[in-house]
Image 1: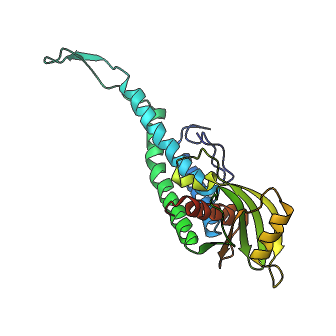
Image 2 (image 1 turned 45 degrees about the vertical axis):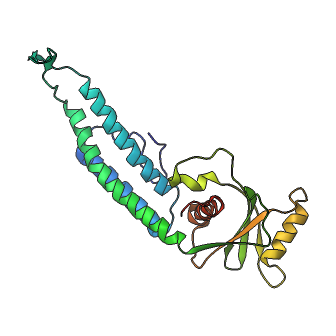
Image 3 (image 1 turned 180 degrees about the horizontal axis):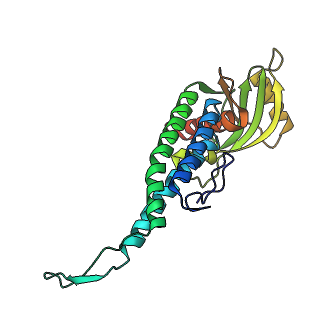
Length: 243
């Protein structure tokens, strides 16, 4: 199961502190309300990933429990006259296991609806983010600079794309590694081209880096949304994958 989230849903919430369906309902609904509030603040990460992880965890738990239940043999009822195999009564779930099934059946649809809302918000915000090259680009763009503009400020990040990349498209922003370098105030004497020239001068071992500016007309939370989505857009551009 996933690590405890900062919205307050423990990884073992289905099982503890007790198996009580009504209490689990309140626990889940409270969690979904907190995630919804973060989405309303346009704070996507890590909340969207955590909801997706919860859905995956519960679906896996359901499959595991089903396999385990199918492996149990109840009372022998007889034998199949065609195959000769034994026929056993299907064992009945005890009360705690039955409640866990009810919790899973209740939780997955709510979590999937919240996941859908998060994905819809991400797609809406991505459409409002633009990326364009600064100056002449080298043949190899697996590393370089990203200039994330917010108003008159541009946050400078070095980026690189590791040779081995995760294949999960939902986590593509993790495929592009960034490191914050500095923040620059844009103006007549401090254009994107000037920032790139200064970076080349400050990093002589990196004489012709790929450099991209990222802009949006929205005011987005930097860490929770703007940086992950800028990485999402940059990775899609650099690898030619669909956004």
